[in-house]
Image 1 (cartoon, helix red, strand yellow):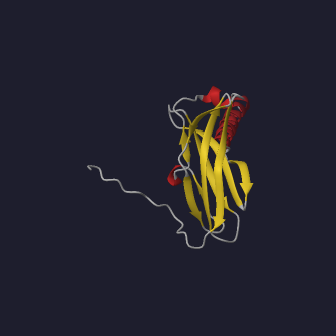
Image 2 (spheres, rainbow, N blue to C red; image 1 turned 45 degrees about the vertical axis):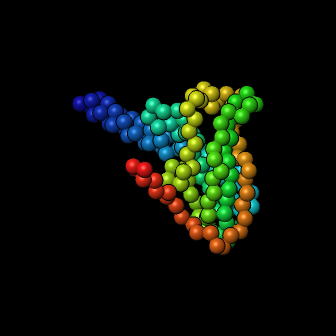
Image 3 (cartoon, rainbow, N blue to C red; image 1 turned 90 degrees about the vertical axis):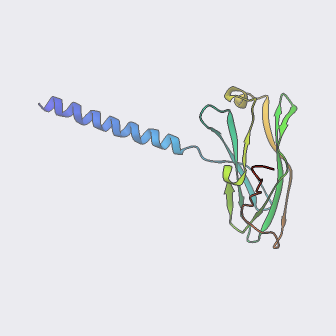
Length: 151
């Protein structure tokens, strides 16, 4: 009787420990800092959504006490050759504000690369044409551009 009770308790304990460890692994995907300049910090993480290729997600934080505009491009290099690049991204950030991910159009997909390519030392990505300046006149927030469904 005691032997059966001990086995049951051990099974439940192992099940709880497995659940806690798998949950912490899921939440362990945090942003890693890429660089910081003029009180602006840009961090990144790679994310896989279902069966798609990996997507680069960026996080931008304004660490200053003034409103700033930020502009940059993301470039992918493969074997020291420019492979792909984004259009110029521009954002207006309030003091202490952080923006990140798809909602802010900070997700950069590549239709070519697979996980092994991202891990290959021949692959790299850079933030290019980075500019930031104090701008009290810019309007922070997400600006959606409405496109008619039927032109």
